Length: 229
Length: 233
Image 1 (cartoon, rainbow over the protein chains, first blue to last red):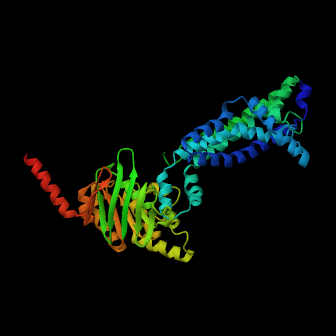
Image 2 (tube, chains in turn yellow, brown):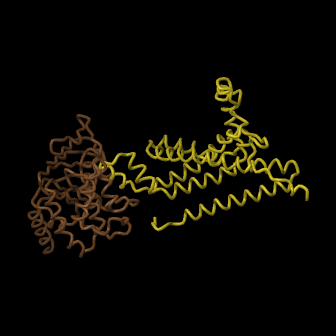
Image 3 (cartoon, rainbow over the protein chains, first blue to last red):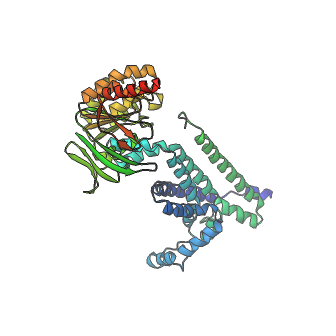
């Protein structure tokens, strides 16, 4: 144990986790907002169906999401075999394979927070903008988004926090290869499995510290700032 | 000239608005929920009537038979919302400038300083709407509307949310703005005293159906007589 604690800690899992979480958060930011915005305008029935579909990954076990993703990206499956044959790219077991998993798992968080924020938007402002001759694009970026800013930032932070912790789907589609696909969460499992308790504990503490920090930011963001609504 | 002849099915009744306004200030007078705001929203292109025609001067804004339905952006209708609908994330100047985005910069700046002066907003240019009083908000909203060069003014209850003192101060001011504007102005109101102050003519609207145009004073006299006779019963 004493010898173990002197070993230099390989920080690759932390780097990889942060990179995956950051990229996924950016992707989810755009598609989550787009989905929330366009779904609000759809007829009720389609809205209901899509809403269930988009929220499903939130409640499904991550292993089910992983399984479904392997059905698409697995080397013998439609998309997976296409990329393998055409570009000689294997879609699974890469560090970036985890981005698929994390994006799907985290998407509902962004989608739902953005939708909640959009629902609180005062549509009179958009109507007023239109009567003043403002384009819908201008209204969206300069009036609607700033109005919903707090909720949307909270959604991104929440997504990032959840992305850091994704384990189930990630381990199925990206596996655990030290220095390649290892993330903090998969490293903890592997280290624990191989009786490397001390190192596992260090990663656990790092993970708790980061998550707590992110949640602290989230709480700070959710405090009503100046404007009271 | 603003000509409106529209129908729209609503939950409680079918809106049937039919009136004409020519270089004048016309009040749309009725109880709350009678369809006043809905009529205004149809004119502004925020709501779509089921059928009918809306014409502003030589432009057809809406015609169900010809499948014409101009978007709000192209109608040039100046709509004063009841809650003013100022953009909360922009300053007073930003709100006014937003309506002049297509003008060249120099003209925009010149027009902005004109409007700031005309609507007595000096010193408030950098303020956010949340820090303005009710009267100030209304002036910003009006300045923003005039920045967009409207062809018709729609005022949705411009006085009802203000307290009495401010109302008294504002009436001559709004009267002056309407006179300066010179075009058609439609004002929605549920208070006959306000209508008498600002609009020589009115049409009433009851459960979505508009009446023929009457002189405000005639209507007021009639209303008063009816009220007097009720009192003597």
